[in-house]
Image (cartoon, rainbow, N blue to C red; front, side, top):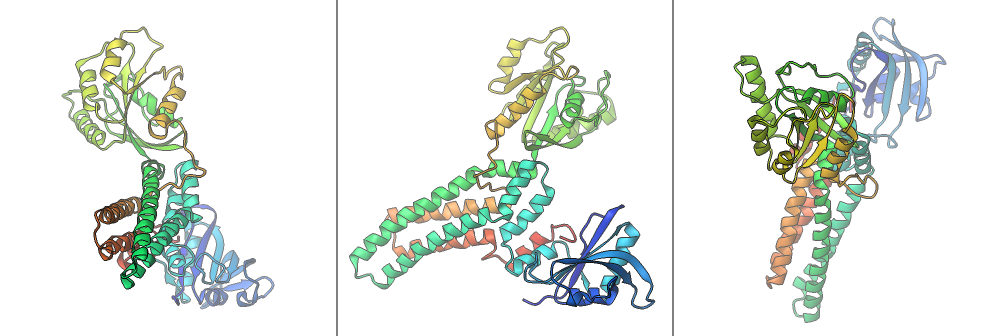
Length: 461
């Protein structure tokens, strides 16, 4: 497939040691040759592939030196896009890198759209759609566990499993065709029904296994939306600071210090938490604090995990009991903080209100109880540990939705066979399952969806 030549800045904008302008396409090397003068006088079109060369970029109009650069030449098809790729390494200043990009664009390249390099890798058969999506997951990974899951998907772990399931369905469909073409042979019909049920059950169980990993996979990919709630001055901001290992929130003895929701990413035992410290939930006449309390209530509704903080040195209040009622049906860990002070709280009442929720006691001032809290969080969602080795995690919402549809269609096929429905009707459900699995890896997917997916990528990737 022939494409035009695209270019983009592939490193973050700002000051740095180096920046990279990447070109990809049939004219990438020729465009670079117009601008680059190597110290040895070599033309880039004559150099060996996967080599790097020192020299200067010249403005073709004025012949003035624009930048001192190192240029990498990688000839297709052994490149990320399977096209010729040139990477111009220049000094990492905003003016410098933009000057290089402008030179490249005025010399025949087109500015790449977001994600267009990866899109070309997909369209040229270098990677499938699930691997392409994993590229963005790798970039956005917040923990080493999330990175390992993305790497596994980039290497084709999910793709191989999906292709194997599609092959199983193809074998079923082949036998169904034989049964339709030769209906006079009873033994063929019996064998087809038996094989169909056996393989369909196998496919269904494999899909179920993938879906069982989906909650954990989605958490690793997107992070666990975690909200710290409690009355004012129970230690919510201190808890945020302890988990982040940085003073992100202002901590004082004055109730109502936190007026808005403070958000931060935290790595807890390999689980990324999107942590929100909320304004203390209470009735107040202060207009600004009241707005903060309303925002806190809103974030609470959307949370995956609630950390409910109580004060060991205070008696339980109506506000505390109301919070227990609000979070009763949510994933909640109760934290009884300030155990370094004299006990005033009724722990028997806390145990009763908490019901099945895990209770952790802490003294954030003395840095006690944080390890137990982290263990409780990991246990709640990952049974205490995350196996990043042999498990194929499904983390992408699109993949999860398609797998749910696959499960429905394969179960309909199984039910129809067991009810004695004609085999050609069963074939429709099997074919639909095969097509849905193909959408995950991009073998049967609409062009508009491909454009939408790659538009979410960062520019230059």
